[in-house]
Image (cartoon, rainbow, N blue to C red; front, side):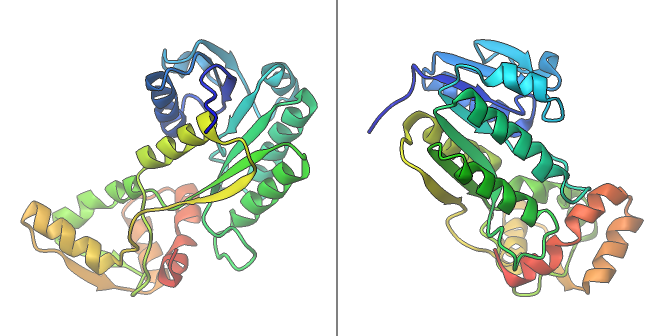
Length: 261
């Protein structure tokens, strides 16, 4: 199996949580030539050989950043509130990578980004995947499932009330930690030399009832699962102070979880 510790590696979105974990893992694996890019380089951890400014809305910064890079990890941006924006940003980065002659492109996508998905930003990921493939450059598409870490946002209210409100029904989700997704990306950066699409998911798909039972057992606190409609759950989140832009991203996940991921 090839190992690219000595390759010139570039990580975008490097000030974010996911990319920071990738940088830590690359450092632990002995990767020597790692460049970290972000709109805010000052926020990047000290785990990269160099840090530069990269803005997916600034083509000049992309052209300069990717020159001479062997392996590029494009971490999907968080532009989820405006349909199409994520795709435009990713396309700009992908086109710049092709122009610069990057040796291998890795892209963090999502599970099942097909036309049947109810998530509004799924088409953005699908078109980004297609743009990567169209370059003709060897690629690794990492379809990360729903982060287990995101459940922490709901835990305070669940534990305070003893009730877990959900619209997921009997739907199951293959939750996976952000750390495991970062480990998968690191492994791909250092070893993958063929094109592939990989599903990065947890070992078992869980219902909310199963999650509640496990949480209750660990914390010694009874938790009641309360099934409500999509609209009722969205209203409850709104009343709890969830910002509108966050709600627009979370709401479509409710029926999606009911279908299973």
